[in-house]
Image 1 (spheres, rainbow, N blue to C red):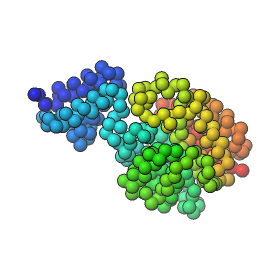
Image 2: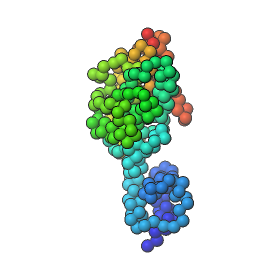
Image 3: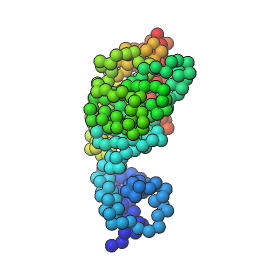
Image 4: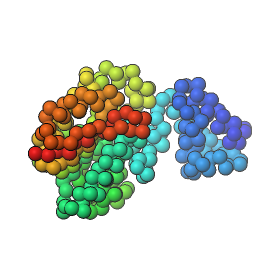
Length: 289
């Protein structure tokens, strides 16, 4: 049997492409790199073949990907903010646009920690894999924060990621629904909540609708039900000069900004930051009384 790399990669690329997987060339090399414990760049340098064991493992992963299972779940990890986070089907796969949340909080904290005592009260609502909370903790080892989720399974994974990154002493994990029963005020509230219209979830990519947890996607009939609930709670739990950063979905900025302008003080600074695709992606509110 021919175990040389070129025909195996072609088989993988063709299988993924025939099953509607976008960027099949990249995905085939991503899984190959994982199966051989090398970088993607190194897959271009291999001049030879694979062991039968490696080939069998690789083909199994490619077959799973062809059926729509996301590569992140197959490999068990994904890169976020330059670090590796373990993920499984109990949590939403972190997206690059969510890094905007970390960027905003980092900029805010860099300024605030120069002027204030480091005991700033921070909560990451719906932490999932813990990628936001852990990334913030890594950037600012002098702070502590609370990370909540409604799912016990998600919290276990998030805590594992905190342990892997050496910040478990900085992050306290708590099972909780949004901001209910949490004692404020909070100086920073950050969240990537569910914001997809309930009726639209079955129409999303099969990777999403068939594999990612719907509880982390379903934002209600309007898509903004949970967003508005969280914003309303945040208004009551933010400190006088507190900072709110929430990821929002495509086409939601106008409604979300209107709602915030209705409930926050007139002198609050309210805006929506665009992602690299030009889509308003992050709601930012600097509270003021």
